[in-house]
Image (cartoon, rainbow, N blue to C red; front, side, top):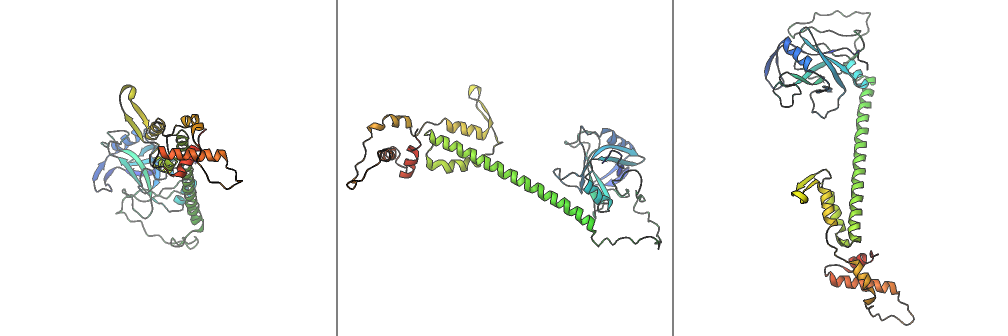
Amino acid sequence: MSDTTNPIEIFRAGTHTAMNGVTLTFSEADLDATANAYGLARHAAPIVVGHPAADAPAYGWVRALTRAGDVLQAHPEQIDPAFAELVNAGRFKKISASFYAPDSPANPAPGVYYLRHVGFLGAQPPAVKGLRDARFGEGETGILTLEFGEDIAEPPTVPDPLESPMPDPTVPDPEIAAREAALAARQTDLDAREAALAAQETAARVKADTDFAEGLIAQGRLLPKDRAGLVAFLATVPAEAALAFGEGQDAFQGASAAWLKTFLASLPVQVDFSERTAGEASLAPPRFSAPEGVQVDPARLQLHARALAFQEAHPGATYTDAVLTVSQER
């Protein structure tokens, strides 16, 4: 939407009771200080539903603040069109503002009340009564003005027989229901995309960890039986976790996963394939009682002999692990 969107009345001077029960008095000078301190470079106040957490969706932003009499006005921009239609349809008629206290550590402008966010309320009453209903419309057309103060009753109105009857608020409006369904569908789509992206990142990390483990096995630094355990352990190490230790040349500062992989890659070789290759000719082939006329594959026989030798050097290794390990020799 354009920058000519109507300003919204979000607060007024006077004595008010906050949601936490604290009663405070605000003067017009306090409103001027809040308006003058506000700036997008310091903190852009979002337009939200209710008073949610900081990570809730923002349906618009407050561009600037001004004072008109005893009322603080917010000038909105970048309003979500679907949300604006819900507001104009009367789904969120009341507004309440949230401020940082002057002494709050998170206050972008210490010493004044700084606008944190503007919350649109439905059935829940705002913290400040007597403000106009909010509408995101162009110009001044169609703005409904309410009396300030709860003790001033509105005069009774006589229905005009020529006017169309007001719609029953208990009957759902198909158009509004469609808008709400569109918002829900968009949120569902965003959640699905985030889940798919997370699954892709997890799969990519598992593949990288598996390739790393295979490399250690090929180098003789890891036994095949330890592959699954190492991959599962690496998955538990947060990629963004930082690690810092040591001094001087021994100092390290970086990701924990990176250090762990560097450490594993520097471990001594458990199976020295180069030495076994050099001495391969000295391995005595085992004796077989093969039937007459049956040929024995020399290469397979040599692999069997090397596997047996590996088992002798590593008593805990199974024959299958021994075959897998020595067969990776280049």
